[in-house]
Length: 129
Image 1 (cartoon, rainbow, N blue to C red):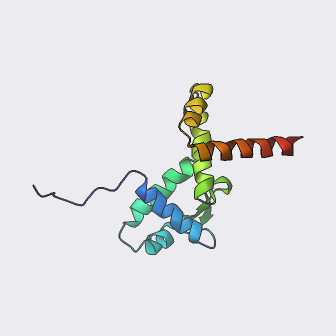
Image 2 (tube, rainbow, N blue to C red):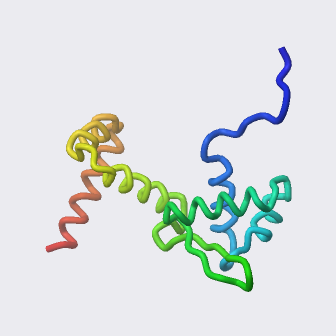
Image 3 (cartoon, rainbow, N blue to C red):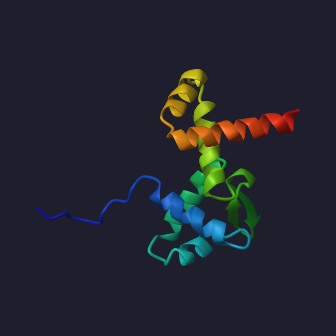
């Protein structure tokens, strides 16, 4: 059976592409700038909607440029690791049982990742003293 219409993207694929453009940029970008950097395959309104949603999530900041906005990554989302850490904190802050969430996260770590996490926690503790 043949598919009709465009193929659907994976969840978050458009947001990731837009963030990639913002991370590569040398300053705030307008939706038209982002659209152009993505190759122009998306409508500018689609790009503007994605940027607006990222702003609502606190992932990007915006400044007024004329009648439009220009967007840049938020300080804590300057790169992919920062964004991943922000998402993890966001999940913990949703009000779920933090202990259970953290316990399940840790139980799923590989031995190497567990050692790395222990080392990072020790390092963090030594900075606090």
